[in-house]
Length: 345
Image 1 (cartoon, rainbow, N blue to C red):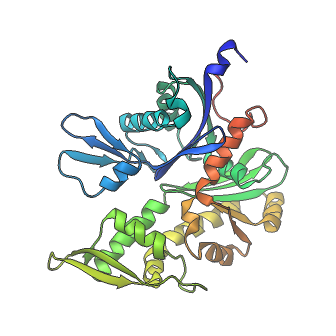
Image 2 (image 1 turned 90 degrees about the horizontal axis):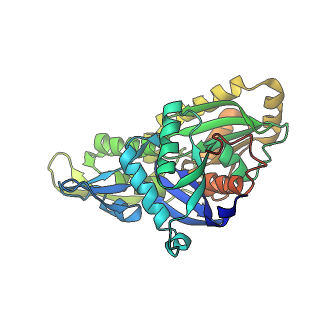
């Protein structure tokens, strides 16, 4: 512990394709969509997070909304850096400080990330005053956030369905034994709904509307015990060009998402087939844990359970499981040393 440690603030970041969450002093202080709005003429960032999300799909030619992360990794370096820096500046406790404090950060990253992509995340963090930057793999953070004791010699399977990627990992003794990262997650589900509305109803809907459909009546299977009510969807008629409204049911959404969910099921089966026998025996007893926003899709746990013949549990508050785990890691850096990537600078 150095003399200047009282000037150092600790933050945990879940830099997600769809949402960015930040924990400071054990509290989630930022929970915002990972979207940036940029003025095309001056090239300035005019809004981030919630404010930029409200502009999405409603901008004129001088304003562009960007999602700086694609498939869980940084696609637009400049925009992502500005976004992280604005989110950090908006943390209430840091706003009161006279000088920007140096930061000790733990950031979670997808397990299928390359060295170059890892460096991009690290450099972004260092430019926003990150003095000590550690990285942790998402499935590992999710497991810690769910409450799994990852250091035990016991196999646990985590499926983290985020916005850009689905991370599947078998964890034992504080390490990932086998993992698979597929680029089928929340964003793909949203695009499936947009495509379905165009082909089946001749209705052109935007990304925000499709997202709303997914949340309100999204389902992974057609036989739900408590089905949601039908929903009215407004968009543009592709034949006449006029705005129109149609009613759709959860069964239609389940049909639209079927192919993508099959790909997630296949990836889970493939990971199970690569699992060493002793760990497979553990997973038979412990089951599969689901985390991430995508796991809230109605009936998904049931469908995966039928496919794998294993019990499937959804984490409580699955949207925040990863950031919770990142926060726990930050508080116990020494305990989780073996899990973290990146030493002190």
